Image (cartoon, rainbow, N blue to C red):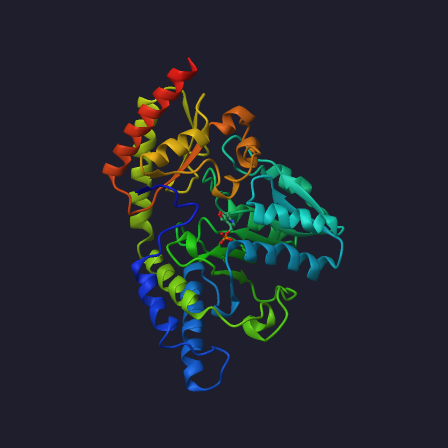
Length: 380
Ligand code: PLP
């Protein structure tokens, strides 16, 4: 199998697996128990906070474990709205956010909050003037994703954070696709809240975290015990925290080496596709883009047909976003950057990892060429 869908999920790394193992059976104590056996579990959870905090430049106490990106995003939108709006108020987000943000916004709109959805340019970059003009006296929160899961566009987060700060507005970023992949500094970027998810950077599934700047008030997401300082009750997911934090530390060490390798491999892939397959369009911003993302519109060839035929050849890619693959609707991200319904339907997303090789890419391009030729032949 050639796995080219790393924005959907990633392989659990050996480092994560080894870090998790002792906490699955040998050290099964409850981190909330005060005896030594429980302390062992608590220690690894605290160490995890420390490792993660170093990567984004915050204090360990500002890291709250969650079950992943969806929960962290719900946490940010719903709990900040409740805490600062108390039933009404205004939130700004973008049209290309993940559904974890968009559907959370829809949910609070039903409760009386108002939300502005900011547009993007043809490369997927948020329209800054539109964002500034949308700010109102009752704006509570700006939530703009760091990197997009479909087209890989990286937003000017530091600039948006500065605008939020200057206007006294809380700033959240969904960093699910970017954490441990590209640098993040919550101080330099003026970020107040940040969402991340373990399985997007070779950690386990079902674990993530939320950064909440000290001083920002948040109402509890889950009521119960005092875990996560009372904000998110429930016995800690010790083994998963051990795996996620170990792999995050490793990812940070190797970040530039990986960015370099993945971007070169991605550029090689795109260059070959554009040169050898006619009528293909590369979507998203070439410069401000995740190093591993290639989103391609293959004119006249349905993305789902291409995906299935590549699957038959042992290659995993995605049509737009993995989270969209069960939806009949054309991708909201591709529509926001100006693609027609037809072109959005003819789009695939290829997301690489540093485990992928040039040989795999050559095989993939050769298969793609053959499939696209066959499909177009039938249509002609
Ligand atoms: N936000 C973004 C940008 C994502 O890409 C995803 C998953 O694809 C999520 C949130 C949801 O994360 P999780 O799968 O950890 O719930």
